[in-house]
Figure (cartoon, helix red, strand yellow):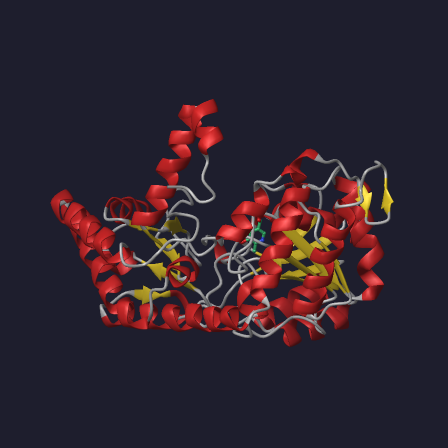
Length: 420
Ligand SMILES: Cc1ncc(COP(=O)(O)O)c(C=O)c1O
C-alpha cells in the first residue's frame, strides 16, 4: 500500500489511484539505475502532499504580494537556512520550480540575449540548458561548447581554457548530466577568473554526494551553484540556486519576478525536510555508499568486458559504450527494462549513432543504495546486466523474464520508502 495511504484519491479517482499504486509497485520490484532518480523518504512524500499547496506567496519571506504568510514565511526561511548550513553558502533561493528554470534564471540574472555563454556539449555529458541548440539557452544566447578528450573521456580543460580565452563568455557552466568523473571546480574557477566570467556549477546530479562529503564542493570556487533537489539529494522534484553574497540579489530578482510567479510551497516544505535529512550522519554514510556501489558495479562491468567512458567512475554514474558488444543503447535498455533493470540509453562522447538510437547506456546507484543494496550485490547485478544484453542480442525473452523474477525476489528483502 502507498504510504502515506491514499484512500481519498483511491475512492475519488480510482483510475489515477490505481495508476499511483501501480507505479509504486513497479518502483518496488525494479532495480532502478537511472542516475537522476531516487526514492524519497515517507516524510518528504508527506510534505509534498500537504495543504501548503493551497497557498499563493509571490515574493520572498517578509516581502510578499499576498496576505496570510504567517506559516509559509517560516517554512521558506527554514528551507533557506538549511540549504545555507548544509552547503556552506552565503545565499540560497529555494523557489525554482525545477532544474531547467533554475538554470534559465541564471542566464536572466547575468546575460543579455545574444551574449556568449559556455557549457559542456550535450552529447559530451552536458545538460540541454547549458546552451544546447534545441534549448532556449542555445537559441537566445550565443553558446560555445566544450567536451571531453577522446583518449581519456574526461573534460578537456585545455579546450575549456582555449575556448574561454577566445570567446570571452559571460558565464561558464561546469557540471552536467552524464559525467562519471569528479568535476575540477578550482580549475574551472581559475579559467573563469582569467576571462571575467561568472562560474556556474550545476551540481544537479551530485548535490547529495557533495552534501554527504563524497564529492568536492564548488563553494569558494563557483560564484553561482544550481541544483535540482530530486536526484542524489533525495528531495522532492524542485531546485535551488545558491551563491556568494555578491550574486544573490540578481539571482533572486531573476527567479521572481523575472521568471516565475508563486513558489510551490508544498515543495519548499519537502525540500526543507530533505535538507534536514541530508545533514544527518546516516546521509553521509548513504552518499559514500552510493559511490562505493558505483565503483563496485563499474569494476564488475569492466571485468565482463564492458567499455566504460573514462574507464570507470568517481561518483554515482556509469556511462557504458556498447559499441564493442554489437548492440545499440536503445535495444539494450529496452531488454534490461523487461529484465527488471531500469536505466536509460544515452549518447557517448563522439557517438557515431543518432541521439534517439545512441551507442550507450547510462546507469547509477543513488536509488538502489537507498533501498539498501551494497557492494556485495554489485557483481550479481553486473551479471544480470551482461546476461540480459546477450539475451537481447539473441531475442531471448525467456531469459529476460527469468532475470526479472530473480530481481523481484532479491528486492523483496529491501524495503522501499513510501511503500509498505
Ligand atoms: C545537470 C542538470 N541540470 C539541470 C537539469 C534539469 O533539471 P529538471 O529536469 O528538473 O528541469 C538536469 C536534469 O536532468 C541535470 O542533469
